[in-house]
Length: 218
Image (tube, rainbow, N blue to C red; front, side, top):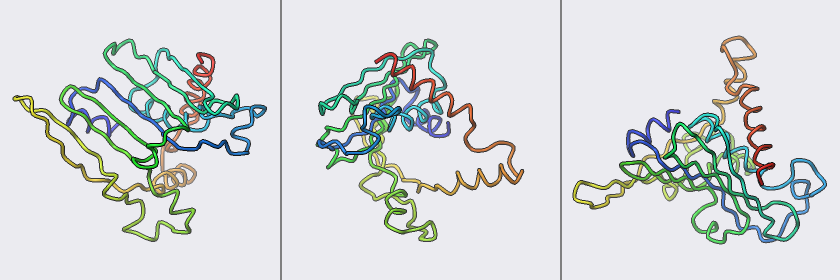
């Protein structure tokens, strides 16, 4: 919600929110995520929850949705999807979530891209939070201040247009990620220091409802 307020301050009222995962994986891995006999397989159930959760946090529950899935590697399991969330109270708003495993340019520009168009400008951010890769590499949050800090090449950009119609782009500072906030929230909820956990069961349920509706739409 703070992110949306910040973007609204910069770009004006949001009219388009496009959030995507782009990957270059022409060969399908041999694991349960891509086994058509396994419930919950495919890209919609793999990366869809992350995209849906973020959109719902920003814009609330949609009233309806439209989803298209494809099996572009020919296995019969969805490895590409396009999901559009509909908000009738905002007929001008487009919320588009998508992902694909056949995007070669992801090797150069990063696999995660968020683009937000507002009435006064455009906000764009690419790149993946480094915390997961750092954990796999054996690093821990004790490696501060480098922990969670993205490279400058992944900085967000904001493009505005002045009264004369000239565009101006500026780099925005990157706030380091911090997984610990989530687990501290769980700790405080269990110990009674917090009123509620950072993620409620209803939040997870809402994401599942949207994904099931998306599968039915597709």
